[in-house]
Image 1 (cartoon, rainbow, N blue to C red):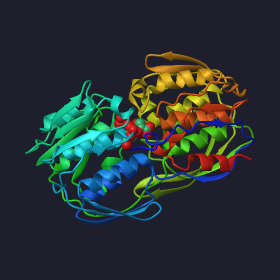
Image 2 (image 1 turned 135 degrees about the vertical axis):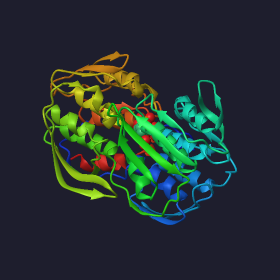
Image 3 (image 1 turned 90 degrees about the vertical axis):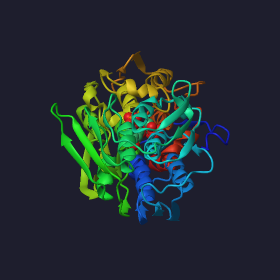
Image 4 (image 1 turned 90 degrees about the horizontal axis):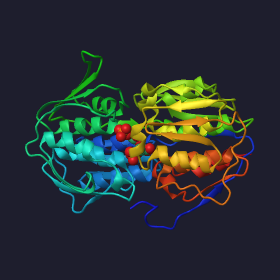
Length: 447
Ligand SMILES: O=C(O)C1=C[C@@H](OP(=O)(O)O)[C@@H](O)[C@H](O)C1
Ligand SMILES: C=C(OP(=O)(O)O)C(=O)O
């Protein structure tokens, strides 16, 4: 149950701000936090995790791992200890696994459990219940799991895990780290070698963390340059001490806010800079953004830096669709930046944005238009004619519809800060999905 399901909508007007100045430290990476809990629950013995994101999506994963028999204890904020049960030894959960708003929890757990002899029901909120699960049902059926899904291959669904599971070699038809990870996680309890062929690289946190836990995982180059990832089952995972780096997808909102609000200078600390996630910084620099990296270091096997971001005039560009996977969750924030750049920004190859927490192409086109931007919605992207640095006029009497989508809410909050009259958001509750202290941090920066 998410906060947006058991309370009343919490609308808010984000007013224009003076210069943003100061330092923010972004919370732990959501993708890495999910994986840290899942793999710790499968290692025999006690793992320690620090910097865990305590957003609602990750808490849904934590609750599921508890229901499957692992012991999880929160020792202080962001610090967790997990006593794992071992690959193959998860228990039959008593009730349905409630995945809340979280696509990552759902698809990765479907994979993990597909090779266990368990019968599991998955449920989710109204947003998650519209999202396609066929993309994992198809490969996991080849592993031998059996599914009864709602019409259209959606939640609620029931899965009977394979017994015995069959190792597959699967070529990803969509660039999706969730589908890749689901298959690799199924491979953990499958005898033999499970292989995923990835034509377009996506975030590689699963590969890094599986190797860190001692799984026998290989990444090779295929004949056409594809990534060929294979994992040997039945794996023995060793408990780990994991430090979760900060989430670049959360940092995105502060980076864009500092670029757009005149005279701002913000230091964003602890930002994960894994090249499979760093596309937004690259694109904003191409648009003229002044983003400096300071103190580049390694945290938990991932590159991390502090970023110093200064207000900059931006220019519109054509964004190479090949960059999309490395900034897939950052497009709503990028669209806000484009709305105030000089000239036109063109994006293509973004069909995947239509199947996130909301249809992020349609919803951002409507939201930015309501706030005074010039936007054309195309099948696979947006074309945005920027104001050339002029503040957007903002919203008067219309509240932006966020459709249970945390990233729409945070992006339009940033648009409000950089607007003339402010932007009204219909509901800020979904922000707790990935970034519970977002509003407090943002309010702390406004002078
Ligand atoms: O693997 C992950 O942790 C994620 C992968 C991406 O989804 P897709 O794999 O569906 O692109 C991303 O949008 C999501 O927020 C997190
Ligand atoms: C798409 C997202 O997450 P998920 O797929 O886990 O719901 C996101 O956080 O933007």
